[in-house]
Figure 1 (cartoon, helix red, strand yellow):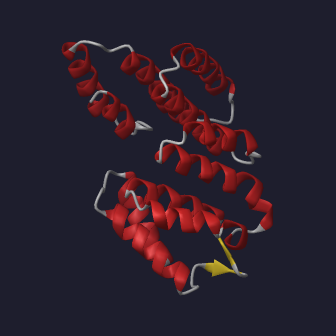
Figure 2: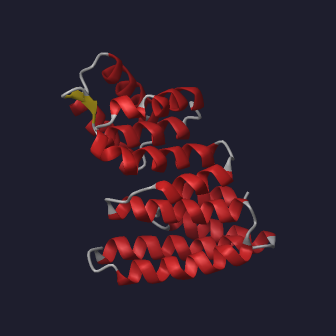
Figure 3: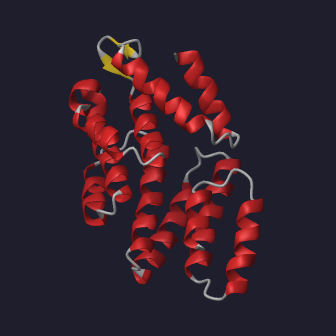
Length: 203
């Protein structure tokens, strides 16, 4: 199961969309059979991946069940970060934006990329709610946050800063020509976090 899942994840990271469902089904089967549990707990990374994949597939009932079992599946030391963080992702997916924000405020961050993920999610929430001033302020502080993080590689910084820049442009694109030009640029940009979401905003 682990080898198969890792293969699917690698293919997903290079644009292998058909492997999303395959990875999700493998996670689910491995969890139910208990083979993915170690000392009775599911890996916090596997938990996060399952939530993300399930949301992508719109398997909301399965994701809800997984979140409800989180206090049993996750080791206690990971619960303060991974339960509210993934609850926020789920709440955003079902358009409960205020609840998503409340959940983000509860997260105890122990991982830089999770904190970046939370900031990206907040940008998406402000966009969905058309909070233009909040979004602008948030993106400004987000930019400074990324630039100050010495532990981030130059490549990671470039990708996240590009996502912030495109978010600003997408929310300010009004004409058909502006949107088409942005679409072409975003589609041509490799390894862009939230590329799918950015393209959806242009629709």
